Amino acid sequence: MSVTGRFAPSPSGPLHFGSLVAALASYCQARSQQGRWILRIEDVDTPRVVSGASEQILRDLEAFGFAWDGPVLYQSDQFERYRFYLEKLLTEGKAFACECSRRSLREQGVRSGPLGQIYPGNCRRKNLPPAGHSVRLNTESATSIAFDDQVYGRFEMNLPATVGDFVLRRVDNIYAYHLAVVVDDELQGIDEVVRGADLLENTCLHLFLQQKLEFSSPRYL
Ligand code: GLU
Image 1 (cartoon, protein in one colour):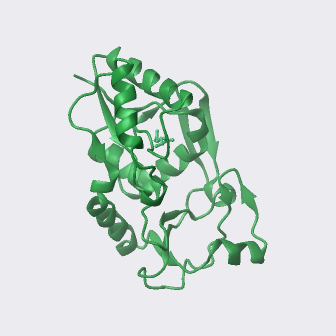
Image 2: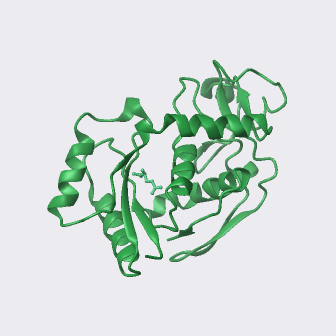
């Protein structure tokens, strides 16, 4: 078996039609290459998890005839691995603690981009302790992040100008989806990510984070 693909729904509600399309596309893409197809429940943002939604998603997928390989991975069981890689980024000076709130940034008049406020780097050199603060990835060096999407073609983004230093762990100690998805795709050996087009911009964040963690990058569609 050459390729491993995955479907990674967030249990913030029942499986909706867009998720079903992503499930079907990722399934066909993996199986048409005689590959493995695994399921990951992205419940890292525990306050947003709707009770019973994971179980319902699994039942719905089964009802549609999907069969996945191996056990289902729950992000809520993986906090130790996210902590490990976050520490690594902090130790290597690639991430930093930040005391800015969304409100203080708004009051400063920071601009917004496609993914929200563009963080201007205020706390990069303050050396704040991570405990009690959010942790952000330093994107200073990410002026051109590009990839070849198998449907959309070349997609390129200047991260400092469009997104800024993005959050890896929130002040309430919740790990960000960006960190969790990059770590899990690496540790689960995912070769090809098939996902909704709403995640095109996010993919550039993931590519940059993979570089910083010295992970290889999967193909994207
Ligand atoms: N969990 C994300 C969602 O349901 C998808 C993640 C991904 O494909 O990377 O929107």
